Length: 435
Image (cartoon, rainbow, N blue to C red; front, side, top):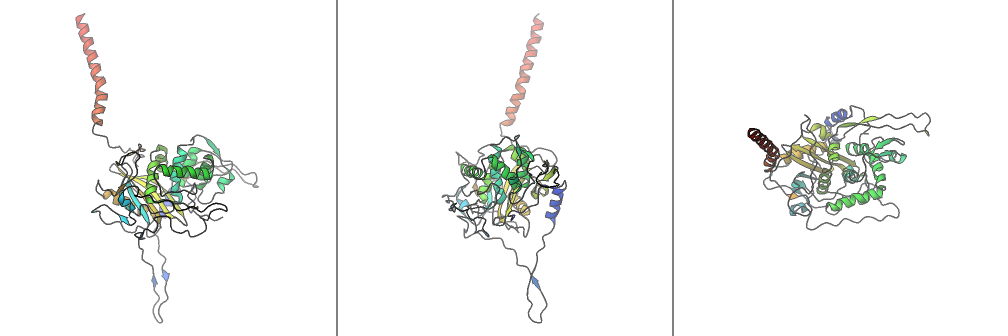
């Protein structure tokens, strides 16, 4: 069975996060291509220089690049999905229709070494789009589409329900957390495996409770439409490539922002490690023994390496390449960065995300090239309350900005009972004197 989505198996040992961080920090060595020296000359090697992908020609306005294999061939009897309609005017504002780099007036030069073909930086709380590249260009999401599955599941399933693992869960293609047949898992644990470790086996177990893969995908697509994420079409619950799979840097920001209205989603994004249940011996396998539980670690390296990181979601398939969505907080501001069709060179996706976050935090406070959609109003305001940021590394909580009248309101709430108490004591004193 071909594994189309690569990743470290999340059924890791206690040092998984540290090991992964060390591996990520290791320098990526370019392998020079051998060249044939001219007759009598000395041998030399060359490495093709890195160039940022150019999207000015809007090649992905209607659909992702052609697949490199047969992963998107429809099953026998299934129709080939047509391209999604392109909204006009562009959702998010006029500049969101641009396909190249979209920056506010007077913005500084972009950071170097960004290999993502499309990306976007937006404000998690206000919905302002600060900067982007091919924001509505259509690319494959890989496992970042699990953000949509998480939203549907967290709003549908009872987190305390216990699910028994199946062989079908264990056999699913791609990255697996380590669900085994006969194992018993709460939905909360399945969500940990889905969000922290991108477990396709967890996605399968969750989708089964939503009516199966097709039903889960339909619910994910309904969610996207309700949020006006019109470039998005899920084909699989896990993000493995399938016919018609599509999203955009803009839509991925919209989906992530919606997910961040769910406190448990925000909590799990920020969780570094938890214990995951094991599963019993398989009686069909001679000599098989019980499989004990094990710790699982968050696979998002930005969480371990970027000050103020809130968390995010990684993804990779052969066709999608590297995908990424994450958020971070600095000085009371929370930004989201999305990357699509990135590569691990010249720097890894989380490092590209870090540079774009730094860039966004350095922009003027009123920088804006577009906005995320809001229902019922063109104003850039949150449509629903967003989950509070997780605690900082030192244990303190980020405090949201208060409106100007908040202090006065608190003063009234505290002062009024004190005033009543003083009046009661005064009346009692007067009454005693009268006696």
